[in-house]
Image 1 (cartoon, rainbow, N blue to C red):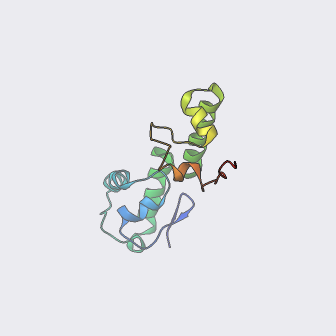
Image 2 (cartoon, rainbow, N blue to C red):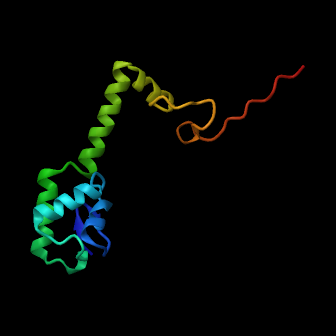
Image 3 (cartoon, helix red, strand yellow):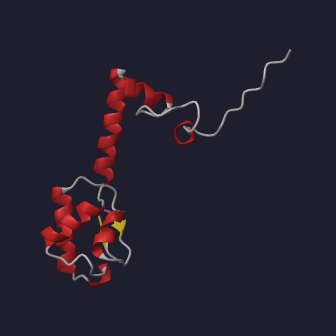
Length: 121
């Protein structure tokens, strides 16, 4: 099993297997295959150690993936919260950021329903 950027890649086509790395999507995976000169439809286990090393080097040098990317994203969100902008406040409150309605349909961001009892007479 090939290991790149701390991730064990499954034995699938190279362009699909690379998407298991956080920060690499389909278009980035295709681009990496072209730069490395590897056929995207070959299986990961069929690659030679030299080809795997080339993939590792390309990803390490040209792309921000896994831990570095997660850290950068977390710092960007923290910066928004620190400066107190609208998006930062929404992050802090755990509400949707991009103008979605919250009266209904915001369960993914808001979490499980917190039922409030009706007012007694």
